[in-house]
Length: 584
Image (tube, rainbow, N blue to C red; front, side):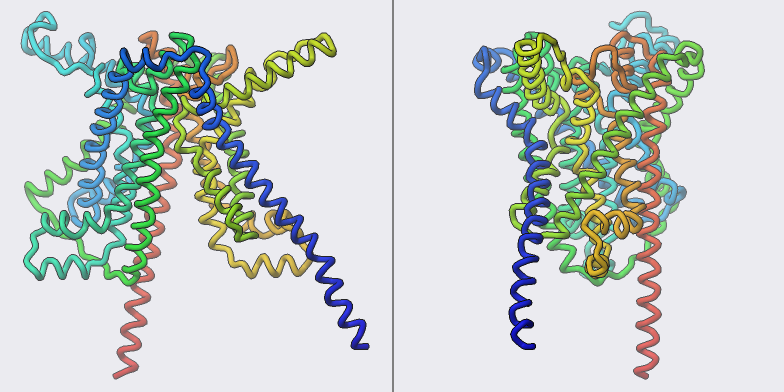
């Protein structure tokens, strides 16, 4: 009886080994293919930049490229300074001070997240231009007649573009800075106070250095969005690298020159990605060394100090959300009969359909990527998953060029083959369809979906997978029967964020959309280009209303985390008190 037992063990092991190997190679292949599809736009742009049909790079260097670089660098510096000043200062005040309206400001400071930069640019141009209500009111009050009679800062300028971007991008810095301030222990700040440091010194010498990694991540995200912006800089006639790419590609008809500018944009992106990765490593190190935190008491502000705190926190909300929303609502009511028609419903449906399909694809792929990391701790697989998450760092205009090139080449090759062998034309099956937009949205927002899903999946115990596998369930069965029910809130959150980002996406949609196919974002851009702000108001208002969904979600998440932290602190205090009583 012993001999069969000895021979059966190796036989079973040999029988199981190919099955495990095939499952491992299957998950690895899926991750590698996904990473290759994400890298396809970057590789296509790099190949075209190195092999242009007409090399105009020397001409660009001598003429327009210095202007593009100067405007881009100044724009990024201005946005960096503005977002840091507003985001860090407001986060510090709502975290460490008590003043009237603090609880409202804590979540209301996220509201400008809902307003795209190109929408707020159109609103303030209508308000602040020469024929707008602000300058008209000033002329009536002071008796001015012409523009030469007074000075008013031009809204359509580099400074105006910086202001518009700062108003909608500072929440990136505010959100992460506030989270970092909340995680800091009061014991450190109390020790600094005991050493004689003032409140200002404690901020700059203690709190800010500890929160610097999180602030740097928020700043990198804001600057990536600055590089991706096209609607604002184009509307204000600010020639940045992104706007210059459109000029060279579509205006001059030189795709190779556009690809070369796209590679230059990617260099900026790589620097920002490196900054973010470095900051995340530093952040994890800081957090690991401060696991035991003591809650702090907020300082109550009175009189003039309280008024200044209210103004500091209220002004970004008024300028970044309330004024644009009121203007859009007013124009939407006035022009409702003009805007509300069959075209509006069709365009709204196009945006909803595109964003929904992108959210579905991104969530499904992100879920499989997260599960593949859970299944196999393989170096190549982990590297492929990380590469798959780089799409969000690619600006939309660069992504559009990189996708258009291989898809159009494939369509042309397939059409030539079908004409030669079957005498029929297939046309633009991929590059002329809605599918190319769904692909672009999925590549760009896959990182958003994967990040949230991966965090949700890590909360599920691996023992549940082992139990399901012992009952005979396959990997897909475990995902559908175990993970999906437990990750329902994380899946809905990831799908919602991708959906909202897709509704607001403009640069890639302008280039890749099929003929006679418009979305809410492209329609707003076209109306604004024709100076029809009123007619675009209803389209813009719908984008803003949809954008409020992730803001509400973020506010609920922050409040839930704080409630959990408070309950944890109370339970820790109770356990400490009870243990002290028992020791006595």
